[in-house]
Structures are given as C-alpha cells and as structure tokens.
Amino acid sequence: MNSTLLNPLSSLMTLYKDKELVLLKYLPEETIKNLENTIFFQKEDMLLYLNDIIYCIYPSTGKIIEKGKIISINHTKLTIKKNSYHITIDVNDYFIFIKQNKNKSNNREFFKELLKQLN
Image 1 (cartoon, rainbow, N blue to C red):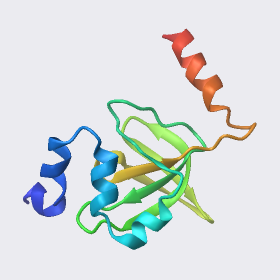
Image 2: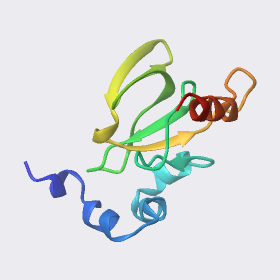
Image 3: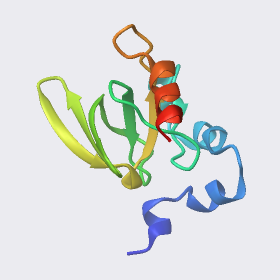
C-alpha cells in the first residue's frame, strides 16, 4: 500500500523543520480545537513519560482516533488508559500530541534528570 495515501502530509513533513506548525495548519479544525496546550511528539527529539496524556491522530484523516494516559511504554508500543479500558498503540502509526502532566505525582523534570544521571 502506498504510504503517501495513508499519510497525505508526509511530503510536507519532510520539507519543514517545524512539523507541529505544518500539522496545525493542515489538520481539520475539530482536531485542532482539541489540541490546545499540547506539543507534537517527535521521537528523535523527545521522550514520552508515564502519566502523559496523548492524542493519537490518524494520518490519513487528521482526526483524533485515541486519547488517553500513558500507563506503559515498551519501545514503540504504548499502552494508554481510556476511561475503563486499556489499549496498546504503535507510535509509528499516528501523529502523537502530548499534554504534559505536571502534577506532584508525575514530576517530569525529576524523571528527566534521573535519566541523565543513569546514562
């Protein structure tokens, strides 16, 4: 199957450095409304953390397919908690936007520093 058909924005995404800006320009308005206070996940530049809330956008439609809190991370597979059930997704299949959870039980800065010390 042709990946360009599955991801019509793929050619634009390769041209521009600011991929989030490209997505926010071309995604449907109903999707953009739900992405307030989120950041686009770029796997080469960022890490995902437990308790982050993610929005999974299907590349061919630009619509949010899944939304939930990360409860497990295993390479490119994430398990997210949705209301009363869990699902596992592959981050390579979606555009992922993160709503960072910055409460006391999920101290993002602490985890970042701990990872630096362990490496």
